[in-house]
Amino acid sequence: MDEIRIIGVRGIPEIGEGDDLATLIVEASGEGAIHSDDIIVVAHKAVSKAEGRVVPGSDRRGAALAESARILRRQGEMVISETRHGFVCANAGVDASNVEGDNVVLLPLDPDLSARRLRARLQHISGVDVGIIISDTFGRAWRIGQTNVAIGVAGLLPFVDYRGTTDAQGRDLSATLICIADEIAGAAEMVMGKTTGVCAAIVRGAPARAGRGAATEIVRPPRGDLFR
Amino acid sequence: MDEIRIIGVRGIPEIGEGDDLATLIVEASGEGAIHSDDIIVVAHKAVSKAEGRVVPGSDRRGAALAESARILRRQGEMVISETRHGFVCANAGVDASNVEGDNVVLLPLDPDLSARRLRARLQHISGVDVGIIISDTFGRAWRIGQTNVAIGVAGLLPFVDYRGTTDAQGRDLSATLICIADEIAGAAEMVMGKTTGVCAAIVRGAPARAGRGAATEIVRPPRGDLFR
Image (tube, rainbow over all chains, first blue to last red; front, side):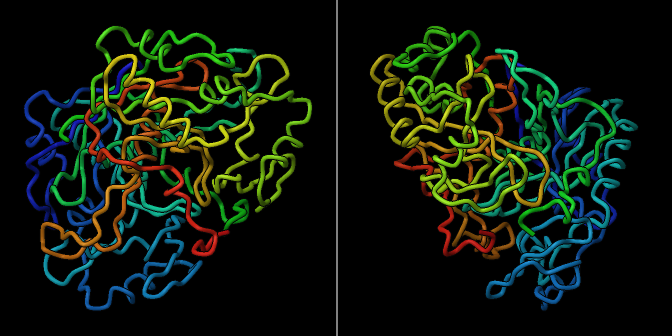
């Protein structure tokens, strides 16, 4: 826990439908570069492209509306909506950057399932037992700018739960539930960038607990959400 | 940009009013451990304590209301409010954990100024030219759990601005403005924890640009905020 390393995986080629992303990540990382207990963060765009979640983008707005379960706000050409997974983000995650031609990329249908498959495949081909986070770039209420967050999780718990523990003075840390999956996704963004073609990162030493976690756990149920 | 290291600084003693936080960080880090161009992330609680921003906590709710410029929502004992700095968070950042006795800790009066002073003092005592981020743990709309974010910034730009640049396919990345200060603060949380007494972290290799940035730049003006 004293040191965390975040390593960008360079050299993964442009992804197309049906590509074996796990093999591409392992090959680009190099022999032995991925260790058990590492967390591999993958940009959702790579996952979506491998899964064929690409549609003609002449009507990006139409695609965003089709991908939305509910519109929260509209502002000019942008909508802020809730996706079918429950994520709240701009244009339902439909993205036109880093896509070939006139296409747009949709979010994976089930990013947690995508993460579990990627994890199983990595274990199969290289024998490592890693955590997987699939990330996307989301805006936030109240704060300018975007950060990367987790939209798919496998092999780790998305939260570090301090509820019921006490601090150094013996006081209850009752309100503290850290979303470490989002912190890891955000940290990995820094080596992935937007223009460099680095779609995966290795995170080593993060204090996430291994386990059967899912990004859907991070979705705040609309009924308990004071800002929806 | 290919590798980022996040190093927890162990051994900083409990902070009291008037303590020289820069010296404590340098001494705990060890000779030569902090390099120029590193970013030092400091938990706001250490800064607040050094600045004497501690009040008797018998009435935490009263303190939270006194620190609020505007109440956005109430839920049981908690308020979500806008602080005088413009930050939106629970209980105006008033915190009872990791404080001695019955006291509560308030946010620094001017966290950007605190960051600039800490930066100048670090430069003075050890000759390093670093960026400073003062962090706090905030909840979010729409997503469960908290992450650490930047409430004070000095010596770096809080955003990486891709607006006007193009992606690998030559398409405009017009909407992308990454709040790297928040990503760095969140990454540093992972080595700081809540129960370990580590109140500072060294972040090395993050692609933040040096410059005269401030955390107030991250505050979304209420008028442009669709969720306030």
